[in-house]
Structure formats: structure tokens, C-alpha cells
Length: 421
Ligand code: EPZ
Image (cartoon, rainbow, N blue to C red; front, side, top):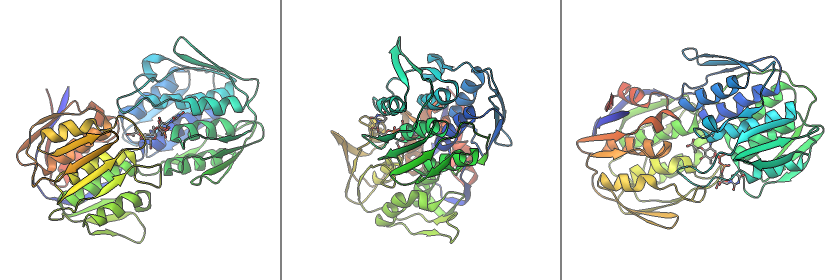
């Protein structure tokens, strides 16, 4: 297994480039199942999750060409397609559930393994299923699989109980090939939803309101393939912003869209950071601050503070002047990084869904274990701050969501190397 060795304390100077968004690429790849011709996604990051989804679609019978150097994935789902997603792949990546809507809409049936829980929480899919049923799907859960059939999906008005990103995506995909108009209320508003809406619109289904809580999709009987360049990854961007506040001398983060991390940027400014965003919203310059002020944050659906950024910001709050708190309101078990940060000398206590962080003057390097994707990024950031050497083990989690993180950070001056244990 690979690990990262980091010697903390270096300044980060120069430019860091943000890759394409993982969480936008995944639903867009499944949109390729909606059309017969060849769809092309460019800017797709070379990440394990993206490859897993491409493999899943290929195993169903689509022709998939993945040019990793050109960051381009071509998918031709002309058929015949076996509308089944097996447990072996779904268990490695929950987002596989996003094939359900497109398969059902185009082929009238789908069999997809239930994703089950994961390290950060139970993560049910009831909202996906409820919405598909409202559109005319017959759904049964048998032997750990969702088995869905329909004689043809029809547009419906669906109100989500919670704003779910995956649920909104699955239903947008299904609605694009449904008969009539679908209205989604209390929809997720994330930038990944807006990117997917662009793709679906370019395929021929009219989408209104993406980015707001009400999305209207006018379904079509047939869709064209798409050619789309994916939006930059806002979580990788946010992770680099935190690194810049920790160690920028200065650090320029290129490509990330500052508006997509407005809540994080606001918090970073509150804790004392000077952040300069250029007019085009695509170059963000940051400098190290002496010692951050303490802060209270709570995670919320977009445009609130992202759950996917709380672990990384917490690494910085460990050395804040005063006591901070982080309340996690999206997932029930997303504090696995706390015990590891405490091993690095932090002073954090978790009480229910809230972590209380008493700022210490410094962290001190040791060996820590990555537990999930964003927790791993938090440990890497903590390693950049800590005195001495930090080893982050089990970084396969990191490879799911960050394209060559170690190499990118080394390029701006971090003392970081990857090795096999
Ligand atoms: C997406 O997960 C992201 N994954 C996650 O990214 C992210 O943390 C999450 O949205 C929240 O922003 C992808 O885009 C591939 P949700 P998703 O459905 O869609 C509850 C990362 O590190 N819920 O918006 O699975 C659910 O339990 C990650 O890249 C239901 O109750 O999240 C949670 O409390 C991990 N029923 C809340 O809604 C449902 O049917 C939000 O989940 C669906 C969700």
C-alpha cells in the first residue's frame, strides 16, 4: 500500500492548477447512457472513481475509450446494453447508483446493487427511489439489488425530503428521457448539478432552474450525445485554498471558480486570511497567516459550507488562537479524522455532531491513517503544518478524489513524497 511522507514547515510558492471535477464527471458519464451515439467528456480527472464508473459502463456493453493523458473519455452506448450494475463495482463506489435513472429511462429496466453504508454515514437512496416511482417505475429490492422496470417514465412533480445531490442528478437524468415535464422541488443546488444540466440541455432536453431549489426538465423521446468539458473541482480547489492560508508565500491557485467556494472563502477571510480573487474569478492568490482566529462553522447543502471541506478546514483550526467548533449536519459519521489529528497534537473533542477544537500552538508529525477521502486530505494539510515528519498511510482513499496531490504540492515547494510500504 502507498503512503505519503511529509516534512512540515515549508512555504508553498507558485501556481497550483485545479483539475476537472470528480463529482461532476460521475453523473455526466452516466448521461452518456441516455444516447445512442458517441459522447465525449473532456477535462475528466484521472481518478480511481472516474475509472471505476467508466469500467462499469464498459462492462454493461458500451464502448469506452479513456485517454488519460488527454483527460478525455468517449462513450458510445449504441447497444446492446446489459442494464445491470453488480455489487463488485457498486461496493467500491456509491456513485454507481447514478446509472439507475439513465438505464431505466432508456431501456425500461435496471438492476443495480444497493450501495450500502460507507465510512461517513448510512447514506440511504430512498429519495432516488421515491422519485423514480413517482415517474412510473416499479421498484423492488431483492437480494441486495434495486430491480426497477417501467413501461415508460412520465414527468412528475417531486419534492425531495432533503436536498440530495445524487438524488437530484438521478432524477434529472431519468426525466430527460421521460414523457412530459418533471419538476424537482427542494433540489440540490451544487455547481455539479448546474454542469449536469448543461450536458442534458446540450443533449436536447430543456432544463430550467438548475442551481435553484426548483428544477424543471422537459423530457424528449430521444437525446443526442454530448461533447462537454467538465467544471473545475471545487473541493480540490478548496483544499488548495486552505493550503495557501497555511503556507502560501504566495500561492496562486489557478482554474478553480472562486464563486463555487464562496462559503469557504468567507470563513477563511474571517479567520484572518487575505485572499485575492482576480476579475475572471479563476486565479486566487493566498498568503500564509501568522495564526488563524478561531471560528464556528456548520456544514449545510450548497451554497452553505460544504461537508466535503470541513475536515480540511479543521486541520487549520487545530492551530487557531482560541476555541473553534465544527458542526457536521449532512453526514452522521464524518469525524474520523479527529482521532488522527489528535495524534498529531491537536486538541479536539467530539460531542454528538459537533467537534470542539481548542487551538494549540503547533502540531507535531507522526504516523496517521487515512480513513476516507476528505479526511485524508485533512491529514496531508496537517502534515504540511506539523513540525517534523508525518506519514499518512492508506492513501488509496486520496487517490479516489485528488489527482496527484503529492506531486502537485511538491511542485510548489512542499517536502512530500509517495512511497510503497
Ligand atoms: C454527494 O454525495 C457527493 N458525492 C459527496 O461527495 C458529498 O459529500 C455529498 O454529495 C454532499 O455534498 C458525489 O457527488 C459523487 P447527498 P451524495 O445525496 O449525492 C441524505 C466526496 O468526498 N439522503 O446529497 O451521496 C444523505 O444521507 C463526497 O467527494 C437521504 O436521506 O450525497 C445525506 O445526509 C463524499 N436519502 C444528505 O441526504 C437519499 O435518498 C445529502 O446526501 C439521499 C440522500
